[in-house]
Length: 408
Ligand SMILES: Cc1cc2nc3c(=O)[nH]c(=O)nc-3n(C[C@H](O)[C@H](O)[C@H](O)COP(=O)(O)OP(=O)(O)OC[C@H]3O[C@@H](n4cnc5c(N)ncnc54)[C@H](O)[C@@H]3O)c2cc1C
Image (tube, rainbow, N blue to C red; front, side):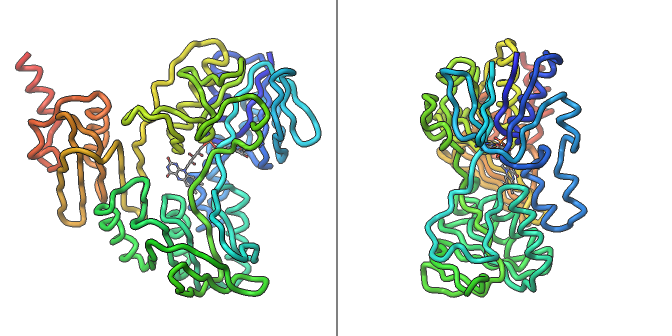
């Protein structure tokens, strides 16, 4: 039996670990267009800060392929898949598979910007992007940086650059920061963190043109503002890598379409992580949910199914925890229904109740009860009787469970 995995990100790695849990003998080939051992993209921001941090991003160790007895094919791109011959075409060679996992992640969807090809303009998605950013900052005199996009990738880039004493401005097309995590009010609260750390922010704006001769010197925004910039980072949305699947017969929508066992419509081909579409457990909609924790769980479930251990994927949580300049921000669920709020001393909590259960919540500058809210939400527990204090420090889940036990 030969397992072939396209991608060495979180989904590919957890897929391989799940396979090896049950099968130490079969051949496994991992293919990546990046020529490096597996790394965690979530840790790239630390490496913008310090060269010493580069090694820490290899979260499974640089010898992962040896540890797992894997044949890596690195620095080579899968161009297409031929299910009828059970072959993957990698640059000019072809690789046969018995079972195939597509864990190819996503790419940065760069909006149309004039004169984008100047030196000093980077995307921030991969380790090689980060190497380029690191080297540019090290070798150039950088005073001003502009980051396009205020999602968690943009904020990560901004934080990394600010900590290098660079003036940083973030430009965001929507009306708030972290638009996929926060509503407008909470986005405004989170903005305080950027203000306190001297990050400039332009909302409802876009970069239309990069200025400078060969090297970036500035950017022009939609509203006509011109900003100085010695480096520009494009951190706009990520979209699944589907291009190489175009003639394969594998069905795609916003991502690769999979069933509850993470099988595609083509026998012996599975998909996991950012490249796959999955069910949002809060809304039950099928969508691309591009989060690290989901990539890991999906990789594991796909791996088990590939070795014949039938395992269902129950759907993707959209609980997201990030830290911006050390301040935790957590978001989860859907922001519709009866609104509850608790704002005190730079701690902001907001929750939505629907049919007496938690529909969604956001927390800024606290992680208190995040796990409890999440489990109450996904188990659809009735919480309306606690609504007066569910967001306060008086909410004590231990006491509530004890009381419930005494009553029953
Ligand atoms: C800077 C940054 C910060 C982030 N922070 C967070 C965070 O705080 N919380 C969070 O939940 N998520 C975060 N994410 C998102 C998270 O990293 C992703 O959801 C996760 O990495 C997805 O894993 P994956 O294995 O599906 O894809 P990826 O990690 O993108 O891996 C895809 C793999 O496929 C390979 N590949 C792609 N196409 C081909 C091809 N044609 N041929 C060969 N190989 C190919 C790539 O080389 C790569 O090895 C962050 C992402 C970035 C970039």
